[in-house]
Image (cartoon, rainbow, N blue to C red):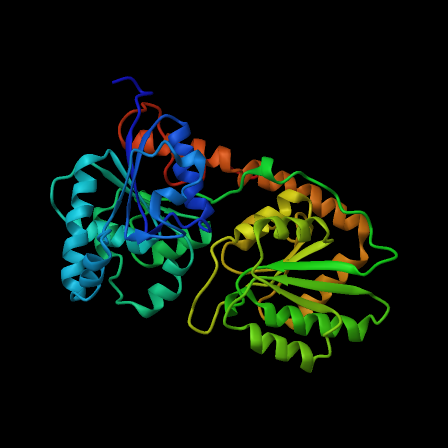
Amino acid sequence: MTNRDPLRIAFRVGRFPTLSETFVLSQIEGMIERGHRVSILADSPADGDGPAALPGRLAGLEEVNYVLPRSPLLAQTYMHLPYRIRRALAGVEERRMCRDNDIVVCNFGWFGAMTAESVGGRQRRARILTIFHGDDMSRTVTQAEPDLYAELFRVGDVLAAVSDFWRRRLVELGAPEEKLTVHHMGVDVDRYPFNLRPPAEARPFELVTVGRLVEKKGAEFILRALARVRESRPDLRFRLRAIGDGPLREPLEALRAELGLQDRVEFLGAVAHERVAEVLAASDAFVLPSVVASDGDMEGIPVSLMEAMASGLPVVSTRHSGIPELVEHGVSGLLAEERDVEDLARQLTRIMTDADGRAELARAARRTVELHFNERLLNDRLDAMLRRLAGREHEPFPLHEPLLRRA
C-alpha cells in the first residue's frame, strides 16, 4: 500500500448524529474529506431518525450502526435487560468494529474504556485512539471506581487530551506518558468572519454569554460581578444577554431580581443558531466565567470561547481547566480567578472601558484561533496521527507533544 491509501476509520460515539457535538462531526467530516472510509458505531439515534438527520457533508459515511435495536419493540426489550447483558451485546459490536477497521476513534474516555474492556487481550486489527474532553476527566472520574481507565491505559494505543491540563491529569491517573498527546478541538474559522466592534458610545455596552445554565458555566458570578460594576461605576451603561437554557434558569432569574438587574440582564433561552449569530454580531464582548461545579464537573476548552474569539469579540473568562491554553491574560483576552466576584468585576470593567485594548485583544484572539484552534489544521493533524498509528506514514510523529505550538 502507498502511504496515501485510505484507512478504515470507525468512530465510537453515544447518540448519533448529535448535531450539538460539532467537534465530533468535524472530525468525521474531516476524515471523509481526506479520503478515508469512515463508519460509525453509536448507542442510539439522536436529533432525528439516524442517518436521515445527517448534514449533507457527512453523506460519504460508509455505514452507521447502532447498538440499540432499530425496532421500537426490540429497543424497549433491550433497555429492560440487565446492564451486564446490554454491555455484553454492545461488546460484540465493539469487537466487530475493532476487527473490521484500521483505527477506532473514541471521543470521551468512557467510550474508550468500554471498547478497551470489550477487546481486552483479544487479537484485533484496529488501533484505538481515545480523546478526553471534560466531563470524562472531571465528574466521571470523581464519581467512578479508581481504576475506571486502567484497562484503557493498558489496551489503548493513543490517549489524546484536549488540553495540556487534562494530559497532566491523565498522568496523575496512571496513564503511560508514551501514549499521551494533546489534541485540541477547534472551529471552522471561515464560518466566523473577523469583525472588530466599534466603540459603544451612545448605547449600552453589549455583553453576551452562551452556554447551558448549569453550575460550571458560572452564570451566577456574571450577575454578581455586574452588580459590583454597577455599584463601583454607576456611569457605565451595559447590558448582558444570556443565550442558553438549563436547570439553573429559575434560580438565576431570582438572583437577577435580588440584585436589581432586571433592566440590565436578559435571559434569551435556547435559540436557533441563526439567532445566536445575530446576537454575537451585535455584541461588544463575550463572557464565560467557568468554575469547578460542586459535583466536580469541569470544562475542557469551551468551543463557544473559540467561536467568539474567531469572530472578533474580546473575551472575559476564568483560569479554569484548559482555558488559559486558549486565552492568554492581557494578550488574547482577560482572565479572572474562579468564583472571585471582585476579580471578575475588575476584568469586566476593563473590557468595557478600554476600547483600544479591546481591539488589540480581539486581533490577538483571532490569530490564536487561526494558528492553534483551527479545525482544518487540527483535522490535518488527526489525519497524520491516524496514518502513523496504522503504519501508513514513515515520518516520525511526536505523539507526546502538540503539533501546533504558540509562536
